[in-house]
Every structure is written in C-alpha cells, then in structure tokens.
Image (cartoon, rainbow, N blue to C red; front, side, top):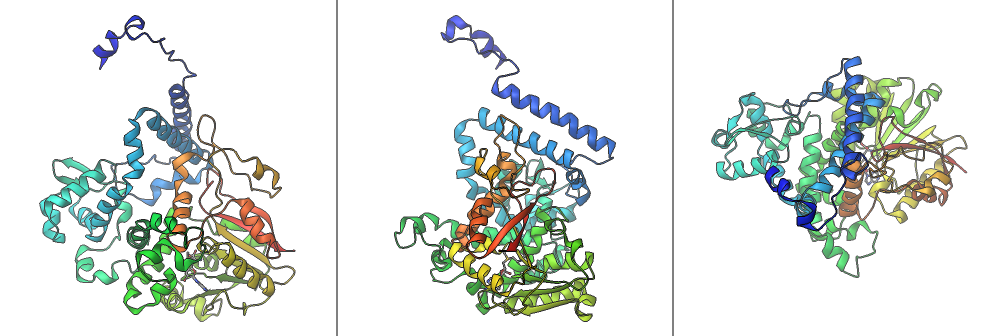
Amino acid sequence: MGSFISKITPKDDQMSQPSYTDTSPIRQLIVLINQNASILEAVCSQKSTPIPDLNAPFHPSTETFRSIPVAAEAANVICAAALQLAAVLMPPQVTLYHVAGGHFKAAAVRACLESNVTEILREAGPKGLSVQGISAINGQDPQKMGRFLRILATNHIYREIEPNVFTNNRISSMMDTLKPTKDLFADPKHKHDGTPGLAALVGHHLDEAFKAAAYSWETLSDPATRRSGDPKASPFARAINSEETLWHFYEHPEQRDRQHRFDIGMQGIQALQPPNAILGAYDWETLPEDSLVVDVGGGVGTSSLSLAANFPRIKIVVQDLSGVIWDGKKVWAEKMPDAIQSGQVILEVHDFFEPQPRRGAAVYLLKQILHDWSDEYCVKILTQLRVAAAPKTKLVLMDSIMPFACHDPGTDKSGIPGAVPREAPAPLLANFGAVNEMGYNADIDMFLLFNSQERTITHIDELLGSTGWKAVKVYRQEGGDSTFLQGIEAIPI
Ligand SMILES: C[S@@+](CC[C@H](N)C(=O)[O-])C[C@H]1O[C@@H](n2cnc3c(N)ncnc32)[C@H](O)[C@@H]1O
C-alpha cells in the first residue's frame, strides 16, 4: 500500500494533490472522535464507570456510563462519526450491502437464536466451543453453523477465537435467555418464560416481521393496497395470505406461542431503553394520592409494574385484549402479587376502540399504541379517550418521535417545550445517523406489521388536535434519546 502511494506524484496522476488538513471531511470526523473519546474517558474515570469491552459478555453495569448525559452524548458522537467515516471510506457496494444484505445476516441470527447457540456458548465458558461441539448439543449441521457464526462474527456478533471455535461477546450475549440449555431443549415452547425478553423480541422480529418484509414490495406495487392504512392489508397480512391483523392472527389457538413470545418481547423493549424511561415520561410525582392511571393497551403491564413500584399511592388499571391480560395476570402474580391483592393494580379486558369504561382518570397512558395504527384508527382511539376525559385529565403518549435526518425548522416553530431534539454537531447527520436507528427500525416494522408508522411531533400534534387534545410538553431523556421513546403530555382542549 505504502509503495503504491509513494509511486503516485502529481505529474503521474494529472490530478491536484488533495490537502489533508483538519478541515477535510475525514479529518473533521476524526477530530470529533478524538475530542469525544477524551470526554468519555475523563467522565468514566471520574465516575469509576467502565467503558464497555466488546469481547466480554454483556453485563448491565457496562451500560452505566450511558446514564451520565455527557458520557452518553460523547459515545453517540463517536459512534455517529465512526459510522460516517466508514460510509466515506468503505467501498460503496459494501456499505450498500450492509443494508441490502441485511436479511442474510438476519437469517444467520435467527438460526443461532432458535438453536440456542448463545446459551450453549455461555455454558462453554471463555474458551468457547467448536462448531462440532455446538452441533452435538443443538443437532444442527456443524458446517452450516460455522458459516452462520462466521458472518455474524465478522459483524461483531460472536467471536471466532480459533478457526471454527466461537465464543460469546458483548453483542451475542444480548440474546441470552440466561436459562440452562437442558431446560431450553427439554421445553422449547417455554424458552422465553421468565426471561429478560430481548431474545423473545428478536425472535418475533426474525419471524413475523421478517416474513412480512419479504412481501413489502408486493403490497406497495398492488394499487389496492399501495396507499392503504388498513392493518388487514399490511405486508404481514399478505405474507400469511389472510386479511387479518397481527392481533387477530395471535388469537388463533395455534398461534398462542407466537403471541406469548410477543408479550414477553414487549418486556424486552425495556432492555432497549433507559431503565427509567417510563418514570421520565411524565411528572408522575405530581399526581395526588389515589389518582387513577389507566394504562390503555398496556400489554402485560410492563410499564405499570415500574409505576406501581415507584408510586405505591397511585391506582393503576391495565387494559388489553383477553389473551394478553391472561398473560399479564401470570406476570403480576410472579413479580408484584401484593399490588393485585391490595387492589392498587387491576388488570382488565378492554378494547380501546370501544367506549372507555374508566371515565375521568387522572392519566390515560398510551405507550407504543398509536404507532401500531394508521391515522384513521388513531383518531378513533384518541376520540374514545377524549370522550372519557375530565377537564384535568392528562393524556401521556409514549412513542418514538421521529426526527428528520436534517435540521427541521418546522419543529422549532411548534412551541411545544422539549419538541426540538438534540442535534449532532456538523458534519454528522443531525439525527446522529444509524446510532439512532432503533426508532427508524420501529417505523418500518410498524409499516410491515400494521400498515402504520412512527410519527414526527408535528404529525402527532395534528392527530391530537383533530381529536380534542393538545400536546403541551415533550419529555426527553438527557444525553441523546432523539428517536427512541419520548413522553408526550397532552391536555383536553
Ligand atoms: C405494542 S404493544 C404495547 C404494549 C404496552 N403498552 C407496552 O408498551 O408494553 C400494543 C398492545 O396493544 C394491544 N391491543 C391491540 N389491539 C387492541 C385493542 N383493540 N384494544 C386493546 N388493546 C389492544 C395489544 O394486545 C398489545 O398488547
């Protein structure tokens, strides 16, 4: 390489010599990386907080630095700059194929997740295990296993420590159910029961959403479904060849396992957001004693578990469809039985398209509900809550507020406190690029499964305005949360 460069002279290549100054695009990115690495190291050393080790299995303590806003932002800037640097310098077809070939890698992740490779490697310990050893336990073909693991190790998921010998790393261990492999193989149906839920969420995305993704263009190229917001006309409906929503699909007795995995996966969302996300979504401490919070479409009550534990003096009703409430009762019996026995928390079946039975609540919470529905359905849900609201009722939405990939002058003008996201410094993309990809992933997932979407704050405010509500505040986590789950407080108008 060096000899090749030394052979090129201005005369040879007939081009003007580029000047490698601090203002060249790659130098600007490197300066950002350097400056922010110094900030990150200084903060972590001052707070005795480790910087993550890619080779070590994941442990929650390695994420402590992200709860320090200045460290979280420094990490985001470093990652955004590194990704942009790679986009500048990598062969463009390779960058294109990171995305266009996403399903190749996704297929490999699914093979490893479903055949319990992460758990097998956990039990094998730091010396790892050969592909023959892995296959002797999970019954898969060793050669195929090696190929799946290698494409993933090439992308920093698992580590190939010797030829054909693999071990877990920080990323692969995120898929660990933390269960003994003998239990997983003896009872595969209950693999995700009692687990942190991220493996269940990944399993759901690699199954229902993956299949739907394969039919997205077929849905868009059909004039009958191209512009539809009907969940029964989604790519998922086309993939299963049945005009039904994901929720109705889950109600078939033979889909019970998938529904169960989805419900546990929603708890896995917790692993993707700051631990106090629901607590920071509204000023809960301002609620008077015995105030009623209705967690509408609350799933098994993941957010309500956190609220009930932190605010024992508020009353909570978790509402959802019958199968989910059934699962929820088991979750609460295990995690917070006292809250149910004392009556602090009630789980009840309610369809949010029907009139809301809990009238005049202090707060109606809609967490990750509106993003499941296109505008015409959101209007119905919001209208039912507006009819039930008292003048002092608050509506708390928790969804990803989507920023543009460039600066948005429209958000500046909205006048809603907190509406303007924290932007990355130039020359980075204003939204921190793929560092904030989770929100954009969710947006496309919503299209695939429900013909719905994540929304900008302007779009949310328009929806609220059309149903008698008004957004008055956006609650953001400090340190860079620009696309993943913000709280939006709205009041009746
Ligand atoms: C994306 S999940 C969010 C669950 C919960 N809010 C959370 O964040 O953990 C959407 C929830 O809406 C529920 N749901 C779908 N249609 C519903 C309906 N018509 N009435 C009530 N709940 C419904 C689903 O069963 C599911 O639990």
